[in-house]
Amino acid sequence: MDLCGRSVVLTGATGGIGEPLCAALVEAGARVLAVGRDAARLDALAARMPRDAVRCVVADLASDDGRQRLLQAARTGSPAPSVLVLAHAQGGFGLFEDQDPQAMARLVDTNLVAPLLLIRALLPLLQAHDQVAVAVVGSTFGSLAFPGFAAYSASKFGLRGLVEALAREYADTPLRFQYLAPRATRTAFNTPAVDALNAELKVASDAPADVARALVAAIERGQARLQLGWPEKLFARLNGVLPGLVDRSLRAQLPAVRRHARSPQPDSREETRHATPLR
Ligand SMILES: NC(=O)c1ccc[n+]([C@@H]2O[C@H](COP(=O)([O-])OP(=O)(O)OC[C@H]3O[C@@H](n4cnc5c(N)ncnc54)[C@H](OP(=O)(O)O)[C@@H]3O)[C@@H](O)[C@H]2O)c1
Image 1 (cartoon, helix red, strand yellow):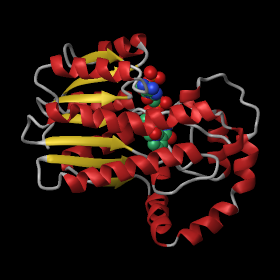
Image 2 (cartoon, protein in one colour; image 1 turned 180 degrees about the vertical axis):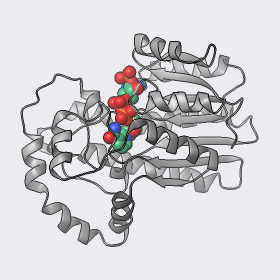
Image 3 (cartoon, rainbow, N blue to C red; image 1 turned 90 degrees about the vertical axis):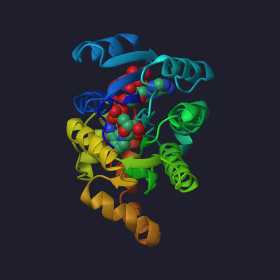
């Protein structure tokens, strides 16, 4: 798909991956409707882009109200959006029994329920075009569930199932659904505890700008599935065919996961800034 001249709805646009993703989409010639909850960060993002390339909408996508606001903004843009990129998410590193039930429910609402409802609500707008892409940013943990990330892994597995089912349901239409999974990426999504766990487990991480470029290239190619990173690609597949092998390998990493999950948190970043090793 040639992105030039297209209108793209981008959620998570203020994120560590979202910002370079917005820039890469604009560089490819797209106009972006950038979505986030922080008006000041959205305005700063738009100010760094060429004039009129980025419109902003402030919306908490975990709420009906926020989703309605996004829908309203998408309806008023011209041209109407033909690409939807869902790159928002809430992280959640911690042992399952230590997690606040309400925070876990909110994570699932943000990461899974919101994408499902947004795709459904935006379909009529998207379907007005003869080429449409819905690209969902997943995670390695959407193919390989990781201890210490139960709710997050569940949300990303759900997202992968959603995208796969939709791709199959709309296979004979102009709609293309894509599940694009970064591995660990150096953004504020990852708390110091996650960074420490990644360092101990020697998990490689990518620069956000590289991830953004890979995501845009995958959208342009219309690639249905993408897993970034070599060992991650292998382990994600291995988990599908020989999950027992992965069980054994992750069991050996449990002591490190438990130690870092319960380590004191030196920062006070909000719940949305929690994260992952392999991701
Ligand atoms: N970083 C990694 O290691 C990594 C690895 C694999 C996959 N991923 C995936 O990559 C995507 C982007 O991650 P990132 O590293 O860019 O994360 P990030 O820097 O924490 O950014 C998260 C983005 O999501 C938005 N967001 C969170 N909750 C929201 C809500 N309820 N309503 C609307 N917007 C909300 C945030 O907007 P606000 O300005 O409102 O906070 C922000 O723009 C996510 O899907 C994540 O799961 C990340």
